[in-house]
Length: 275
View 1 (cartoon, rainbow, N blue to C red):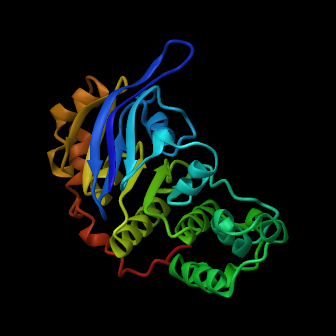
View 2 (tube, rainbow, N blue to C red):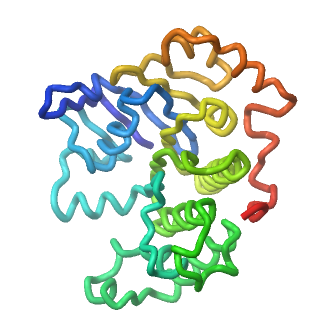
């Protein structure tokens, strides 16, 4: 479980990115984090894994208060947090397999990491994950030869290679077409269900957030202004989060006959489709 208690972040410029954020994410729950640009979504994700230092509050992963850790203890704690990035963050000159195995770098010695020597168990798990995300046949291909959707699949496999206790996802579909975006969200949701992983997904696409999240948290000006089920995200709530706008078209698009709870996109669907 992840628990945030009164987390705040004020930058040196005086800008208040986060103000008294408190919520819990139980095992297996996928949280869609939405809000306008500058609402604090990325700051929140980065405060959780301490890429950004929170100004106040506590962040607990299980019984560990991440805000109190430094040095080696912080590095060890970060092994428990898988991160999926908007821009993939792959080493492009390395192969798909090498990128996935880099998820184990926090668990191997310095000389093993330098020589990229991993245990047979690590390699076996990496192959299984590549099979899962539909890239088993691409294991020896360089990362710079992949499409955007394929790169994001590698990023998902790398994060899962860590065997994390928490998944943080920052705009995973921002550069992808609608079909690939749905496939990527389906993969993430399926992995969380299979592993009982709590996850927070920073996402701009409200429809995708509703379709693939168990819960929606809306931020505005660094504060939580909505925390509820996807079907509670009414026009009034969207206005509270984003400001005045005619949301009729968005609501109409969601009623095109497809389920908004992800039931039409169950993990049993062929995940390799349309790689």
